[in-house]
Image 1 (spheres, rainbow, N blue to C red):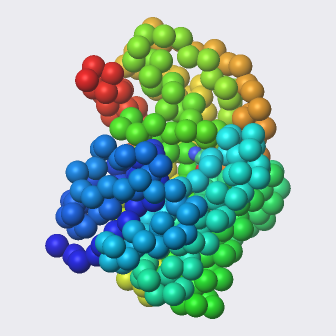
Image 2 (cartoon, protein in one colour):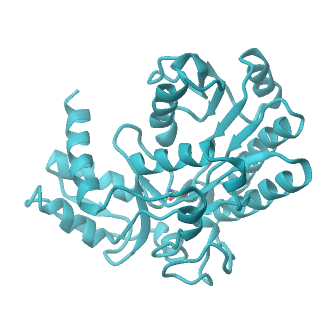
Length: 315
Ligand code: AKB
């Protein structure tokens, strides 16, 4: 077993719920400390209540558990941050600076910080969006992620901080639920389908977005963090591609298992956000630098989601 002492911030969220278990299998659950604003019941190892915007409380946990690595998963996502722009900016930036400063002062050795496809904007090439391209995000969340990427690179170049990052597409999972994102429809839809209810999509039927099943996202995250330092050539954030589809295509894919399932469309303010984002992503840098390859396609993702949501609703 490798010796790392890991702190997961935002461990009760959509990613953290699954990441803690995956990390526990590699490093031992006693070496994974799960923190969030509320108790993290899904984790069998140590768990603490922590507001990551409180630097002293964060530093105290880092010292107490002799943390070497932080996975910083705290963020206000795109849809919520549009409603609370200042709060969104403050939370997303303050917590990042806290963690980067702990790494700069050598209190921790390694940081994972998630970026997002939200760093791109309406002027970005929409299809097969390259790693390096025009980035003029039009959402608060996108602006915070874009600035955060540059700060990560700055701390790496100036202070040697080993910070690594992925631009996550929309993440699809059943163990943990998303909250406040524009891509959340692709999770909600499965709950309606399994319950036998009609689903009203808040994005129109033709909105293509880059998405990924959580198992792939977790594997990518941990592979990036375990890759040799010399392989990491990008210190802003890596593009990562999984599956691109529209609500209409997702509906059709679910109907192959649940043929009665109905969807209608009532686009709201999230449509504008989705329209500003890419439809598909070129992740050749991640493939070349640290051998990234997704395993799930639309069919295998739908099969696992339907089974997973059924299991969750019946438990
Ligand atoms: C969101 O929709 O805000 C997130 C994201 C793409 O980063 N899922």
